[in-house]
Image 1 (cartoon, helix red, strand yellow):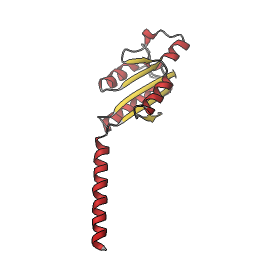
Image 2: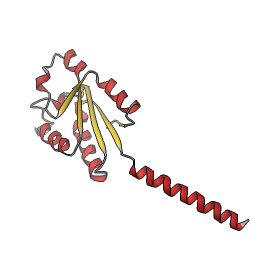
Image 3: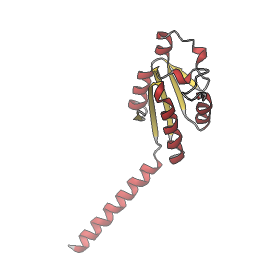
Image 4: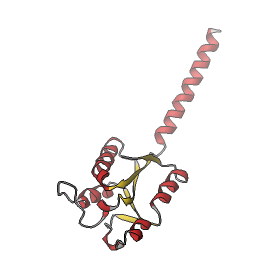
Length: 142
C-alpha cells in the first residue's frame, strides 16, 4: 500500500507541475475599467505597477462616461500634471486604451480631442463585455 501511495503522490505532483507550467505560459490578459476620471490617476498607477510585476501582461483600459475625460487632449490631473505623458508611456509598454464613441456622441465631444494613443470603440460597455467573454480578459475596476 505504501508503494501505491508513493506512486499516486508522484503522479499527482507531476500533473500539478505540468498544470503550473502551462498556466505560467498562458498569457495574462487584463482589462481595466474606468468610468470616472477621478479614478484615472489610480488606474494608471495600478497599470504601471501591474506591468512592473508582470511585464508580459496584455492590458487594455476601457473608458466610458465621465471616465474618458483623462484621455482627451489637454486633460490634467488635480495637481496640474498632464495625463498624456503617462498614457503615452504606458502605450509604449503595450497598453491599449479604448474610448467609448457613445459617450463622445452623447456628450457632443469632437473625436479629434481623443489622445492618439486611444482607439475609439462603438460602445465602452460592449467592449468590456467582448474582451471578457470572447478574448478571456480578466476584469479590474480601480
